[in-house]
Length: 140
Image (cartoon, rainbow, N blue to C red; front, side, top):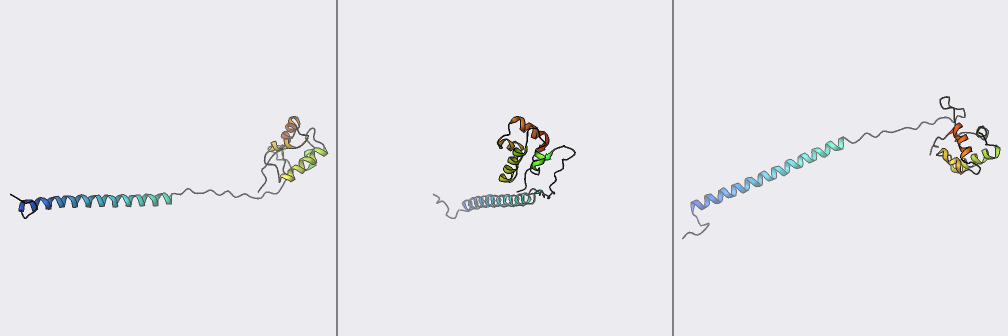
C-alpha cells in the first residue's frame, strides 16, 4: 500500500511537473496583464495628445456705421437713428422713438422680429422695416 506524497520518486516527478505547469501558466497570465496595461497606457497617452484644437474666434470691434452696406442696401437696426427708422413706410417720429426706446431698454435687438414687440408695429409695418433694416446681435 502506497501513501500519497510519501517519497515515491514517480509521485514527486508528477508533482514537480504539475507545479511547473501551474507556474508557467501564472507567469504567462501575469505577462499578458502587464502587456495589456502597457498598451492601455500608450493608448491613453495617444488620446491625450490628440485633443481637438480649439478654434478661437476673435471678435473685432467695428466702428458703428449708419451708412447702408452697398451689398445689402440695408441699415443695422441696432445702429439706426430715429431719422433712419422714419425712412420705412408707415414709421413716423413717434414710432421711431418707441423703437429707439425699446432698443435701449433691451440693450439692442437680437432678432429683427423683436420690432413686433413695439406698440404700433404690425405685420405690414414690420415688412416695410425688414426691407430696409437687418439686425446684428449686439456685443455682450
